[in-house]
Length: 73
Image (cartoon, rainbow, N blue to C red; front, top):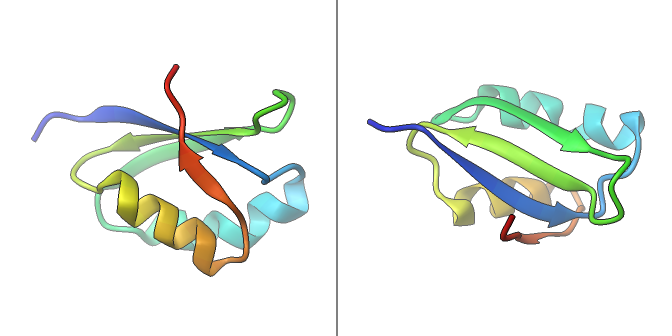
């Protein structure tokens, strides 16, 4: 399966926020790596997908109490 980068605009803005989502994203099937650019105004979460859908990533983030919406680079 081809990997692709998915990007999301979020309200994840600090290392504490990142720690709240880390286990879920690290253990999610279909994610091989991810990061959040907390220095950008849109707090962009980039996920290297190997099968996970945008909707599944958004659901993970929302379950942790954060907002996420797809972002076009």
